[in-house]
Amino acid sequence: MPRITHSNLLKTDLALRRYIPILGYLQYENSTYWTRSNFFLTSNTLLLGFFLNIVPYSTQAPFIRLFTIYPIAVAGNILCWLWLQTLQSGSIWINHWHNVLQSLEPQAFNHIHVFSDVEEIERRTWIKLIAKSVPLLFMALWMLALGYLRFVASQKAKGLELF
Image 1 (tube, helix red, strand yellow):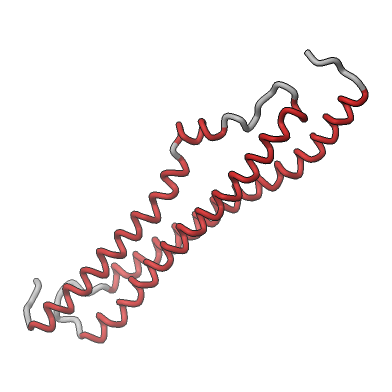
Image 2 (image 1 turned 90 degrees about the vertical axis):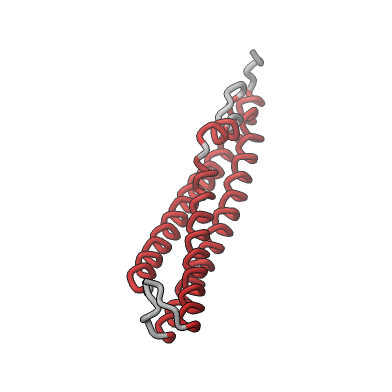
């Protein structure tokens, strides 16, 4: 055990004073990460529900209706891409603050490791992997929607009836 001196106490106090606001930044980034993820999840769910409510199920729908709902599917894809970019950006900041806190731990807490095992815990829980998979699932659904609209339009152009 290291000897406790006035100099060591001052170093520890300084490290703790640095540690506390950085921990606040990490908490803010984590909160923002999940708030943004929930926003995009809700937005995509509402947009997909609206789309599925108005999508034609036969070629009886006029072309103008097909072309007016096509931008909704495109907007859904763009929203998913923005969602992925937002999650990536949030992950970068969260990892940054984890690394800063890890570098301050030895000075602030001596032999106690608070954030040294964060990466291992995240690997075991898979939470971030799941969070990043949901936008990809929605993107696949939007691509299927675009394909379906294209199929309906092509069948309508050929004069064929779907159902």
